[in-house]
Structure formats: C-alpha cells, structure tokens
Amino acid sequence: MFRHAGWPGGNCLQAMQVLTTVLLKPGEADRILAGHPWIYHGSVLRLTQPAADGELVQIKDHRQRFLGVGFYNSRSKINVRVISPERVTVDQAFFEERIRAALAVRQRHLPNATSFRVVNAESDALSGLIVDKYEDVLVVQTSSLGMDQRKPIILAALQGMFSPRAIVERNEAASRKFEGLPDANGILAGSLEGPVAITLNGLRFEVDVLGGHKTGLYLDQQVNYQRVAELARGGQVVDAFSFHGGFGLHAARAGAAHVHLLDQSAEAIAAAMRNAAANGLAEQCSSEAVNVFDWLKAQTVTQPHEKIVPRWDLIVLDPPSFTRNRASVPDALRGYKEIHLRALKLLKTGGTLATFCCSHHVNAGLFQDTVLSAAFDARRVLRRVATYSQSPDHPIIPMIPETEYLKGFAFEVVR
Ligand code: SAH
Image (spheres, rainbow, N blue to C red):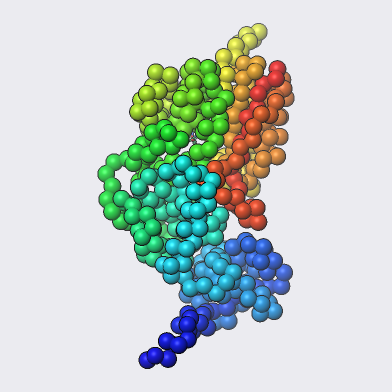
C-alpha cells in the first residue's frame, strides 16, 4: 500500500511507461525540436501499440530519441499535437501552470487591458485551446480532440484562477470538423444574460459572446485601434468593414471631425451605433449597412471627363480574410487590390490609408505589393508611416509561422 510513498513521482513514472510511442520518419524531428507542435500523418513512421484518439502519447525520432508528449488523433491530418518537450502529466495543475504563464505575457505587454485573449493556442504551447476574457466572462474554444476531451480539467483550472461570472463555449470553428468534433455553443458554467459590457482602451463596447463573430470581438486589433486613432485628429474618416466600430470609435474619441462606418451586416452596424452612443460619440458618427465593394464603386465611378473629388482624410480598411487557403490567394489579391485602388482615389493628398490583412497566406510583402500596385493604377505616391501587427495577446512564435496572420500599414498620400 505504501510502496509508492517513498518514491516521489512513482505514480507519474508508471503512467508514463504505458504511453504509446509515436515514432517519426527520418528527417521529421527537427521541426518538433524547433518548437513546432504539429506532427502530420505523413511524418509518422509507426506507433508502438494502438492509441485511442485523444490519448497522450510520447514522440520519438526514428533513433528512439525522446522529443516530447502530445495528443494523438488518427482522424486528423495532424496526428499529434505536441504539448510538451518533457514527460509531463496533463492534469489540472498542468493547465493552471500553462495558463498562468500565458496570463503573465498579457500582463507584461497589455498591462491595462481587462479584456484580452488569455490563451492563443500554439502561441502559448496549448495547441487546440483558445481562451478569451471579456471582463469577468471567459469564452473557450477547443479545436483539437485532445483538448476537447480535457475540457473538464481546463474549466476547473479557469474557475480556480479567474472565478468568472460565466464560461462560454464557442466551438463552431471549421477546424473542429477535421478533428471529428461536432459544433457546440453555449454556457458551460455560471450564467449570462444579454451582452457583456467591456472596456477597451477606455471605450465601452457591448459584446455578444454567444452569437458574435469569432468569440465576440476582434481583440487582435486592440493595440492598433489606438495607434490608428492617432492619425484621425480633425479628419473625415471612413471605417470600412467596421464590425462593431472598433477603429471608428477610437478615431472619433481621438478627435476625428466625422466617422462614417461601413459594414454589410446590419446587426454589426446597429451594435456599432449603440457603442457610439454609449461612449457619447454618436454625433460624430454616421453609418451604412452596405457591401464595401459596392460603396467604394459608387463613390469612384465617374462620367466621362468627370473627376472624383477626394474628400476623406483617413480610410481604414479591415476586411475579413479573403482567402482561407493558398489556392485562392490570386483571387484574394484581386479583391485587396480593388478596394485599395478605389480607397486611394477617395483620399485627399496628405490623407492616410490604414489597411489590414488578416490572411495568413498573404504575407506583409505580398500585401504591400498589392497596395503599391493599386497606388500605381490610381497614380498616387505613398509614404509608409506605420506598420502594424496583431496585438500581443495573440503572440507570434516565428518558429510556428501559423501564429502570424495579421499585418497592416498606414500610408500617407504624398501626391
Ligand atoms: N474592423 C473590425 C473587424 C472587421 S471583421 C473590428 O476591428 O472589429 C470584417 C467585417 O467585415 C465583418 O464585420 C463583416 O460583417 C464585414 N464584411 C465582410 N465582407 C464585407 C463586405 N463585402 N462589405 C462590407 N462588410 C463586409
């Protein structure tokens, strides 16, 4: 009965000994050693014994060198998601430690934020787990089978650390299908009525955590809202693809003369105008529920010999990702070019274009090339005055290229 008592870690060691080993093919270990957590089916040489989907396995290279432990899923193209380079036990304490480390990163880089992404999957060595904090409400996404199966201990860890009013699950990500997981959406703990009122950079926003885009808001732009707003003072501003008015409301508060919000979703526009009113900014704001492509076209189509009179000082373009895969990049670039071409025609000389691209498949260089090609066609010369990235609660791990997706620029129109 006391056999393990004098042998610290004995239980843990025993548990480890029964872990199935996934052996990698020659040449496949370096990626994992470098810190990338994904092991594709094609990299696997063999398993030493059958493993259940979701089970913790150990990974070794073809020479039996230990590389780490991770969650196995035969149904996914990503057969193993590495969770640690060490022989860890994945229990509640493990999640507490990882989440605490992730939280410390946010506290260091976003010290004043009360709503932010607490855990950003691969960025925080927790592939398959996203946790967003909207004041005292947490929103969780589990996009891998291994994580999904461990939801009870993850929730227990979150309860202990944050004592949230509610924990909500927003599990409709397309990636869940590739893991064999069904959609799931609802309250996992606590209770919630109506939208959550949050403060972002001192502005109030209403967040519909159960039904909004992503997990409710685009937290990845939190830092950029303020930086772009610095360029808005006194100006006539367009916030195109505004969603709930993140850029527009920050610009209005920073002293824009007027902000025009555009989004094709009538609900998003209604929420943006409610947010404008809640912050005392409604008088400075107008809005239209329109397709931005159509709006820009209507503003830029001219009769023969008619000239466009540029009337805007700042145009913000923050469209959704136009491409989810490499194959559709050319189409996406045509879309990006069109909105830039038209937006550039509408800007006054000296005006500013603040533009974002959230597609992982279009990198900053390609994105800038597209803007420059539009500028050439519009016969405008640009001065780049700022570059933007995702907010630090969506950390970039360069060894894991998939963690980097949001890029943006501010360009002034020289002529
Ligand atoms: N700038 C926003 C996020 C934009 S997300 C923020 O910081 O919160 C993209 C938005 O574009 C969504 O709200 C979506 O409804 C809208 N959208 C997508 N395609 C559109 C189109 N063609 N015209 C207008 N809005 C569009």
